[in-house]
Image 1 (cartoon, rainbow, N blue to C red):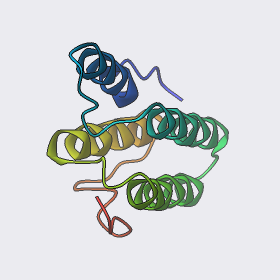
Image 2 (image 1 turned 180 degrees about the horizontal axis):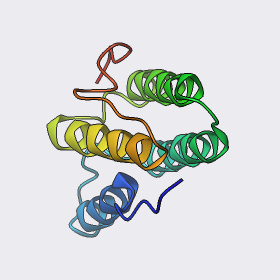
Image 3 (image 1 turned 180 degrees about the vertical axis):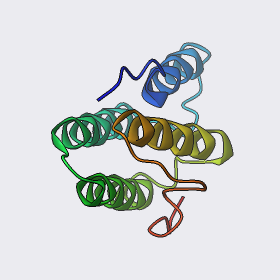
Length: 114
């Protein structure tokens, strides 16, 4: 897998959460949602690193997208417009770094709740 230089979206989310918390608000993030998101992305990257075919890359994409669908419901719809764009971009760029060649949104087929 080529180097993925794009930072995980959860880095910005954690910064935003800390900023909101310091200002006395909670925003729409939680430590748990960010932690679970990090775990999903970690599993996704591992699946991509071990993928030996486009089919396995697509399976990894499907799993991470469905995982974020479930997380978004479980944590009261924390994935809004900015987060959606960040996730789409990250998932796409990671798949490309793993060797997938695809024009379009790789998440569209499975994305339901974000």
